[in-house]
Image 1: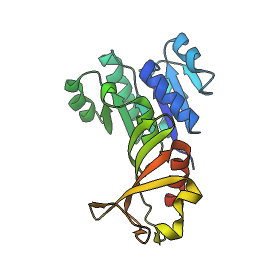
Image 2 (image 1 turned 180 degrees about the horizontal axis):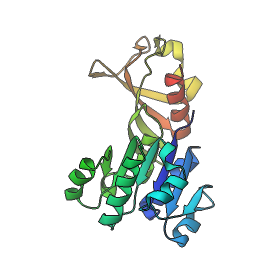
Image 3 (image 1 turned 90 degrees about the vertical axis):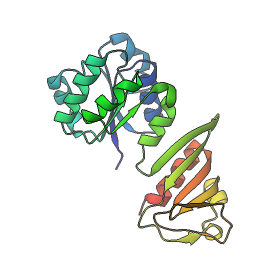
Length: 219
């Protein structure tokens, strides 16, 4: 089942998060109080709404309480960010990522119930969107163009197989550059196995990495 997202606040950072999530086929609702912000991404994000995220009744009517992960990207408005975060907590949204404009605001947002707080200068919108789109993606680094380096947690039900058996390069067109097993990192050989609960470091094109992530965690 696809994860569901809401992005509240469609400035440059929030808009890029929303567009990236939409581009990887996530089920996403985008919200902003400004009509021009909604219009600007409406062709790339099908479900866009002009709405005030600081209003509990608005979020409730939009069904935000049933969404898996919320991204609060309002920016430059501490009061609006706080009100929106409190509303999301009251609606029992499990995961809430909040944009902070200052380091000093991080602790406040965590105290109010944020599960993750980021400063845009420290994390790109595309990296955030790709990371939160999958529970098994632990870290995501843009390399160049369509390429990325990603740390993926291997599912607990995965059947252990060697790299030779998996033939990853031919089947997925990605490269495994490292395996973390029992907190120890090593560069693998073809005879080494990927086992449940390992972490693999993968380099390749983004769509191929996503297919490999699904393969490692589908069972």
